[in-house]
Image (cartoon, rainbow, N blue to C red; front, side, top):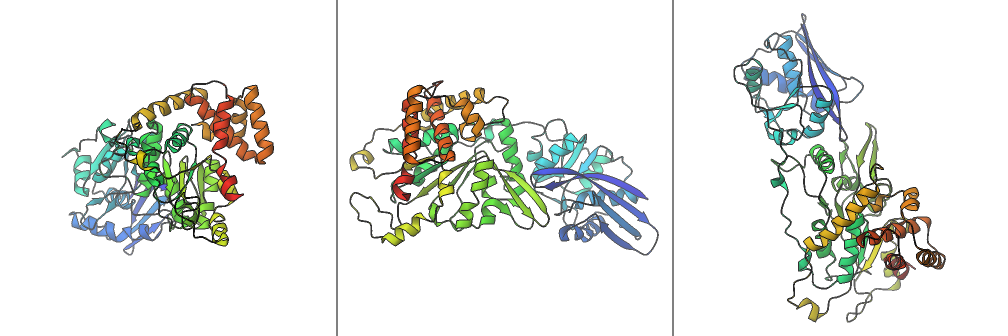
Length: 507
């Protein structure tokens, strides 16, 4: 007696088709599980055995062989419990219903309850692409799966509900496909709360308009973290494609909020500086996404930037350049998307008061140099904008006049992004900061005066090729904010001033 049931597997944020085959034959009672299973999958034999008995069905006293195909891909996790159980019940003829066109995902408890699973969204997407018409998912993951249109999503609490549905006794209603705008969280942090710091807010606006990486340097208490936490309030709204891609990452990582169908707010990740390189890039036994990928389509805020482990900081270099992070382990190689904006904040020296107007710096020259050398030149070169955050005077901080709100700044950012969308339509480039050197040369057209200023600055400052491209992209964003087709001399001049701090602090 033989039966075959469809399921799905996860590798990275991508899914692949899985077929669970069960064969029941005469011989000494035995339950073999093959198909390159890991320890969690092997343990499913005991969960499936107990679930079948506790739900009132008969576990076959025969030789049972279950194969999870394809056999050359290692199977991980407990999501195969449900399809294994369904294949055994079908092979033992305890289920008469036709299971063609159905797929099953879920971990089982010993009493037949179905527990939630990670990565349901990419598995449902793959099932639909493979022609599956209906899929049973854990009840807790129903909202997540309902994002996909064109496939019936059946939420199941236990085995009995599934079998009753298949036999037509108690049909389960599929979850409706809808993307509610109510899931967009209200933004509570506003730039109207930030007193003064107009130059810093201007730099942050440019960074948001072009998705540029930004490094803020200043004494403690000047508002670096306060400003960084408000950047999300001026970023453009996510497109449907960005929402789905971000939700897939959070689904695989098991960090999707309860009852949320789709992540509609750009991620803001702020890891502590003690995080390991693996925590930042991702990895571990199951190669889960790290903070870099969890910040995909959003912001990665790294406060106290020099205090991060050097390997952690250097691990940013490849994702910032390529827009993706690749993890290679013995079990395989996984690539996660990493289209993010890095916002870093640091003090000018270990004590924090270098250049302070009233508080003297107590650091030795050696301590200052060691502190600055924690950030390598190649990493500093990848930060598009460097801005100094100064102390705010009493008159400014005590002024009760309301500052410009995030909504007003966001309007200008949105207009600049609309210009970029039209410019890069069909190229796969999402923003000015993501332009290739070839695209930079094509789209960053300067006036004659701007070209002369750029040439003088390039020769005087001894820029690298990467620094030149960064300045051109920032200048392109400044021009977009002013709806200027050409890059004028004032755009170059402003972009150049955002690259001066590396000369001041690292010369």
